[in-house]
Length: 258
Image (cartoon, rainbow, N blue to C red; front, side, top):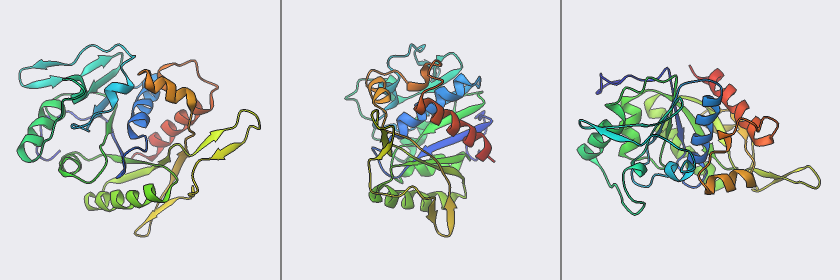
């Protein structure tokens, strides 16, 4: 920490990040958080997209204690071991938070830096792009990067921009998740690719970033997300393909964190 010495950070901090929107960062963030929760870790989940938060939509089917104000801080909601903070819990869907400069720093302090998270793993769901918010977080809080993309040329080009920003802050990259890569055929039991891209390790500036896993487009996950129930909320999916994928990703994250 550079500017917020009272912030009690987690043992492990994971930024879930991509330069491109619509690749499933929030879905991945939520389900990774619940994966670690199922494994017995104390977990924090911060929705860093202050203007257009997605996570409240993805967890509306899970009963949290509400976020509340304490002095000038917004305390996280709670569910079992999960602490969760989002601007989407504080107003209507049509409300917007368009912040920059000192207003952005103030909002981050109220929602994030001013709070003692006291968790084993803190997942930060980053918005797309390379904005002041990214600079504020990456400069003030060192963490490990988990890139999310799709195996599509446009997504990979935006990933290059993200990698360029990360390199400026010398942050450790755990690897890349290729999301919505394929569907599992229920008749032929084959994996049918959804894009004409490649699932080779991602390279930038002579650095190779490992593809941790390729996640399928899962109809059940999509349905559960639409009703606000995280796919990994249910521990009874132990033999399901996507469940096992997320368990593998969690194990790779734990190995890849410095």
